[in-house]
Image (tube, rainbow, N blue to C red; front, side, top):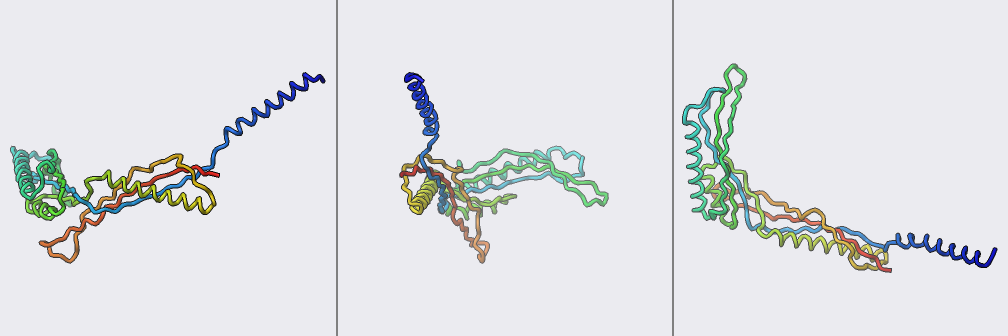
Length: 247
């Protein structure tokens, strides 16, 4: 074997070893630590929303029998008159007119089934309109509910409490989640005698979740002095942090 041939083989061997070493070096990843944290904020609500429905119904008739002329129009006119009066009553109770949302008219047939004794089923037409209210001053809520009751709403779906500035509350929940994740990372690193490096990645979990409260009435009160207890609204957030670990 000549000196030139040996040199070429040695050079080729070094190059091959270097070529194998490159992927191994490229695949090497720095050590990391990934932790998740949850944060929750409890806050008193500062606004409320409620919904109610008004309806008028045509007289009952045997199923398949046509309504008398004008019955449906009479029901619709009576409903519109009641809705107009209700809105005026709510404005007088302190609800801003732009915070009153009267929904569109709906017409639904109703069938009242008999007990099967040979009598025909009875039917009628229900004319309905919903109304939604945004109450920006909670101290007005008892007055508003009294106004709705006196106006004879046909269905009241209850009160849901909320906060006006949801963004600020969500930020507080996220900050609490980050603080929790950071605390967990420091505790884990300390217990393993590791050194935390910079944060490499931040991943927010699902959007912060509000847990609104429905209206709760204090027990043991007479009807004309009911207390409305909104309680607190819970807001939850979740954050995942990935840290580099330093040697």
